[in-house]
Length: 457
Ligand SMILES: Cc1ncc(COP(=O)(O)O)c(C=O)c1O
Image (tube, rainbow, N blue to C red):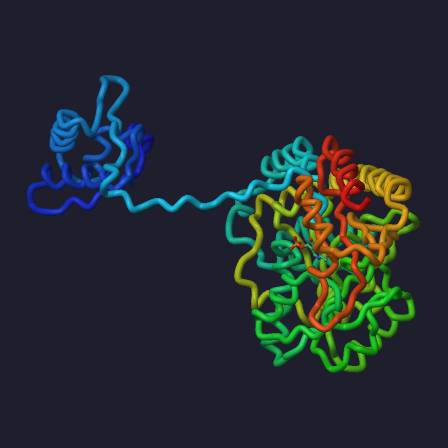
């Protein structure tokens, strides 16, 4: 009996009045009428529902029988009892259809890698291995800094591949870079900071995030050598993309990296190094992380959004020692332990390295094709920011506007972005497109590229 009860389902019913059977019938009718129980929903066996409601089994059986007679339910021996009717249309609240915008057929907007290349099989194998080997306590409330297994694996990986000075104790695992940035903004506000310097070109969402935490986002000029350190002023923090400026694609010059670190140590300002695509460098050795110059002044922030997939919502902060507890104190949520375990297993098994190396090869080939094709078919377009990352900047000849090209591309089923949408207020820019060449699946890349050339011609 206990087994049958346990295999049943939960059903919330407000059984009102003193006559239990009538009350139960009304509650079931009401649940069907209002659409809480849809046609096809299987009801619990009478014995199980009787036990849940604390009434006699016969009472439930009789109520079911009455509703079968009225046509609300159907029953067959061995198959149970189920709802036959959908809610009465008259009682339905009017449904306003949500207009669905079809995703563009071809998408060359930056920010998302090729999702069809997500290593499903390897990720599943890592999840299986990790969950199989994990002790029970891993399923309890996790360490808010992140599971020790993952912080240890990340410390080794970041030190080896990015030169980060990363002891596991200074790592905090978070739900992607956006979450990490939100935590840091909260911390800056809690310490009385009021301004965060941001690059004059970057994600509007990051500027808005800072503003939603009560910080003023103050744009800093960016030129061919990256952000200009002299403009950091008295900000409480500086959010920078030193390895590969987003979206211009330039690298922060070595002297400027040193100047930024000097600014931090002189003013007490915190540097947030957004290393969103640091693994993808094509022309030479990856530029090492800036954090290693001054681990007590620079937060190194990384994410699995480009190397694996943004849907994982996994990222990490490598913090100055003195800030770890303060960040933990403002944490409101952390990623699932199962995902953390899987990423740890994926890193230690070498799966992450293999994935990054395959992706790097594939994206490099795409970048080369983009360059060669544009050279041939749109020679007036100057392509920059191509030494690294998953996007390129296409500087437009004087007679073209971003809006015109974006509209023409839309007419060809192709989504593209202009630099204007990444430009902070008050910053000037020449017309350009920011093309994310990693995004289409392999089979769509050729056509996407051909359509881009048609639009640019
Ligand atoms: C500049 C920059 N930073 C960070 C990210 C990653 O953000 P998240 O880890 O929240 O997905 C992106 C992704 O588009 C990005 O372009």
